[in-house]
Image (cartoon, rainbow, N blue to C red; front, side, top):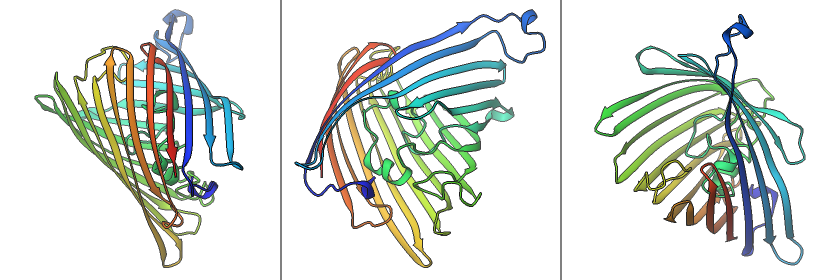
Length: 334
């Protein structure tokens, strides 16, 4: 985040990310063996390892070279009932103890509504629900990290949503959530026990040759000054030949995505800092499983909008399996 380091001069950055996934493996359970257990016969186990190598040049006094196992993740998922799904994601970030990243149940209700409860990546913006090894780029965009922190929104919450099929490939969705205001960057990191509230609207269409989606997200809650933080996000995604590499993560032949974020934060009684940020990314799959892309990012400081930062990047991704990849990203920031 901006307050953590100086970005006054251009900085060269090279990153390499390696994501290795052991796809979901079914474990057989018989109804007779588990007796009264609610677990079904389709418990699935997955594993993911995220390795990152990073070299940054901030000048003679601020060089950094890192080779790090950024995260190891194990997932357990089960269709408990035809209408009830459960999941647990255990993760061990670098230099931290193993912890529960997500643990939630999702229930399909009547009239197309769906309820999700537990601790999970909350629905906000374009990337918040995407795990680190599955992001389209190695690094987290600057405004997302500045306004939501490196961990983004992963709060204990209850979300109610509904997806509507409008026919001819069109669809729309709406969701609303109440969650703990534990996020250290945006709110009070659990100091007050106050709740935060959020919601998202989106609209999109998918056809054989093109697809797009537009989204609007908002959240509000008290921060550590006993003031209020309000954040809004406008996001978009456009895909050409969306099924070009069917079966792989990010199968589209060409994708363009991005987000604009607006952060209003009370930093003292009657004093607010209104900061904005934006990022965009293009990705071209020149042959199946091989991608080239480029991105640009800009953000103002969430506590002082006069502090600004920019970054530009280019990446190459090779999917050596449908859900695992080697990715190299290089760029510059200022």
